[in-house]
Length: 291
Image 1 (cartoon, rainbow, N blue to C red):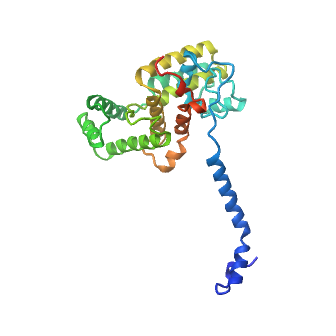
Image 2 (cartoon, rainbow, N blue to C red):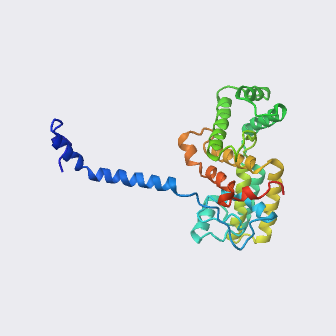
Image 3 (cartoon, rainbow, N blue to C red):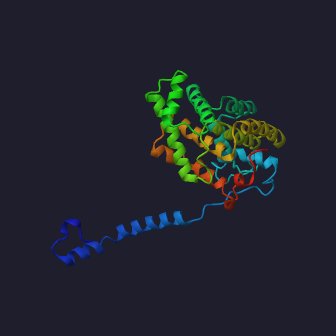
């Protein structure tokens, strides 16, 4: 195969021979293009449910609160309160990641999520300011209005505060663009990050059944209590789904998301859209928010 150094740019035949000799490069590019096209053209997989458990009614509705977290696991079935889809290795991973080797640790983990909710005090204050302003104005406050409210409660309104407000606005815009305004209307804005912890709490409860820490009946009682908290705090699946994604991205980026970290953490954003799409068997499209 002629090398680049031997190509005579003044000789058309030499150039053609060299170009033909690069077949392996074209083959690699071709394979990449085919893979990208296949990924883009493949239909989005439908939400899978366990045939042995209901997909409607109150119990299914309560389990749907944990869907974004449950669906982070391969092969997960959102309506299965026993997490029977887990393999032995999956369960070992849950124990390792969540520190729930015993029933006591599992119960404590749920308690931390429901009570502590992964909150950071100053973030919670700033979100409360936004909630109050939204109720007072009848719309989401603009950046300057939110910062002015933060100053009123003792914040500086400067660098760190601006970074927080900017991050929340940016995540909201990205999520809304990804799921569409039909799923996340402009009228729905993030006033809490608690959806992340509460969704995790439902998922962790079902995993405890698979680990042998609990039975289905107890798990359902715990999940009902978690739902009572969530349904009082949020107004819709859209409100809850946005909160879950805001909380997850802000938590894992320490409040400083960028393009790379957003994309890395965006799987639940895509699941948010899937869960809200009737054609994909999305339960959030079929189940009412109010129990």
